[in-house]
Length: 374
Image 1 (tube, rainbow, N blue to C red):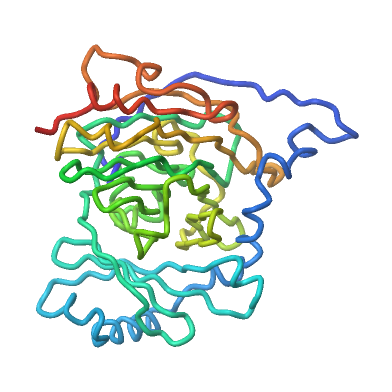
Image 2 (cartoon, helix red, strand yellow):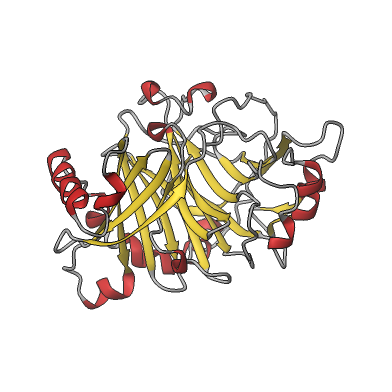
C-alpha cells in the first residue's frame, strides 16, 4: 500500500536528548505518565486477551460459519476469496464492567478485488456486521507521500495521537491517510511489501483513512503485501473530532507485534497481532519507521475541500529499548515523495515537529503539487 518501491535515503541527523535531574531520575522517566496518556493503559491491561491469537483451525471454522450466515453468504458465493487473517475488537468500558467478556473477532478478506471486513461476536461466533471497501495496491503511492522519519534512540514501540479530522466525503475523490509505521531492525526497504521476506524483513502500519465512505481505522503489514485492512466494520465508529491513538509495539520475549487502533472518545479499540521471529527493536529509518500523510489519489485533483481544517498529528512517542519508557520522539527527518519536481520542500506541505507542537498538513498545497488525478 505504501512503501514497496521507496528509495532508501540516508541522512546524518542526530538530536541529543536533554536529561534533567529529578530526584535521581531523568526527566522522561519522571514524567512517563504525562508522556504516554493514561487512557491507553485501559487497553493495555487486557494484554492477554489482545495477544491470544486464534488457532488456524478455529479461524477456518469461523470462516465456514461466515460463508453460511444469511448476512454474509452472498458476499462469497461463486467469488474468489482470500482470507487475510483476523484482528480483535473490544470496548474498554464494556471490559471494565465485565473483564471476562471475550473480545469480538474481525475477519479480513479480499473478495473479487474488494476488501471485506466481518465483525464476529466473540461469545456466539455469529456475524454482527460487515463492511466492503475497495482494495488499494501494495506500493508507494504515485501521488504525494509526506514523511516524518524517526531519528531518535533505539525504540520498540511507536505511537501517534491525533484527532479524527473535520472531513466530509466528496464523491469521486479517492482517499488520503495519516499513518504511523515501524520496521523490524535489519529490514530491507525494498522487501517491505514482500511476504516471502518475513521474518528477515517485517514492516507494520496503523492509522486512519479518509475516503468517500467516511473515515476508517486501518492497518497493513508485510504479510498483507502492504494492502490495507480495515479495523472498523461500521463507518459511524470514527467521527470527526474523535480522539484517536494509533500504535505499534513489539514484545521482546514473544516476538509479537501488536498493531493498535484506539478511539478514546467512545472506548472502542482494535488490535492485530503478528509473531515475527527475531524481533528486538525497530529500524531507525527515515522511511519505514515514520509518520506518513499519504495521498494515493488518482480519482480527482479536487479533494482538499473535504477538510474544513487542516489535519494534524498532535504528538508522537517512542518506547525506548533501554528502559521501556515512553517518551516524545527524539527528532524527525522530513521529506516529500512524488510531488511536483522542483516544488516545495517538506515545510511547504507540512509544519511543526512530532515531539513538540505536532505536525499539521497543508492539504491545499498537497492537492496542488502532489496530484496526478484527472
